[in-house]
Amino acid sequence: MGPLSGPLCPKALQETLGTALKQSLKTSDATQAKTRVAELNQTFTTIIKEAQAHALATPHTATATAAQGPRLAVGRPRYQRARLLGERLVAELAQAYLAEVSQRLRPGSFKSVRFALSLLTSHLGKNAISDLSLSHGKEVLGYITQLSPNVRKYRQGKDAGLVGLASLSVASEGITLAPQTQARILKQMSQFLDWCVGEGELGANPWEALKVKDRPEVHPHGMLSDAQVSILLAAKDRVLHSALLFGLLTGMRSGEICGLMAEDVTAKGNLGRFVSIRPNAVRLLKSKAAEREVPLHGVLEGLLDTTLPTSGRLFPHLTVDRVVKRYAKLRHLHPELHGTVFHSTRKWFITQCERTGVPEHFTATLVGHHSARSANKLTYGLYSAGISDEQKREIVEGIRLPQDVVL
Image 1 (tube, rainbow, N blue to C red):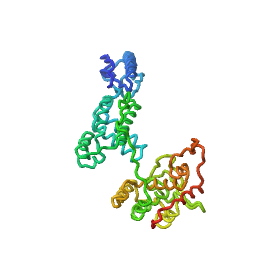
Image 2: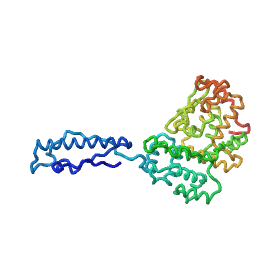
Image 3: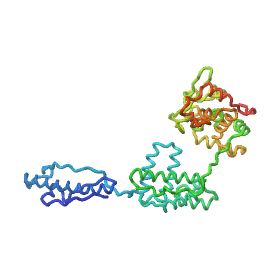
């Protein structure tokens, strides 16, 4: 709703008040807007009556200026600019949404949301948010199901929108995104529409009932065998070798390893050195459970004494992105590693714990998982103070690298 014009001023008062009184409404609620129209009309009437009374009491002279004119004691109410529900464009709202979520999402998660919203706005960005319907949602989902994993790597796909990417995918590749990836993109778009509802820009989410037809299937990355561990460590990769040892002997995630600081390492007498995994300026943690203290294996203590920095970051040149790409290079050089990723080192550590008889909730404490439940449904995270440093040390020292590994 645009600015509302009030009544025309009597000619005698136009020098003071102008030809017409106008006041903008500021509300997103149409019912409130109607109420405020009546309020303002009453206010305008009062203003004119006051002006007429002042005009009679203080006659104007030919030389009077506007600044010398009568002052009115009636205040004008201030409202937010009125706007019809749903009139803002999808692209405009998407920008506001991304600015908000960028403050609370980690870079990787934000990048994923930004990609989903770029697909949406490329196709429907010029539409008013209220124009979106279930039919639009089905149309968008249809294009999403045609996308291939590598389509953005093509030169033509760099700046292409949703429709262009779908066409390029069909023409260039015979594979499509996994169902869980399709579902994630659709969910991120739907979460944006939920946000619009919460912001009062939309009455209801028209895509709430949309689902990906194919059932999402999880394809976990492979767990490293002892033979593959031997290949990885024998390669002595100048970038990843020390980080691989940390992954294998602590079960840390790649992001946790990249963010390790020398100051995080503390000595505990005859129990050796421990490392505190906690949020810092380099990286956040996946969850509250990920904040933990882990004993360092003897092999890792040797690295601290001989190879790694004594202050600042232990791996100053590593990022998660570089870890991923470097491991991919190792996979290319050693085909025997096919199906594994850096995260497979964490799986290897957990498997070794299981094979040496470590209780599941002990392992969960070491690797930063939410605590497991016992056979009688006791939740350890709620009712236990956790395992002792002595128990942690015993578990970690029980982990053995393959016998043929030469460090």
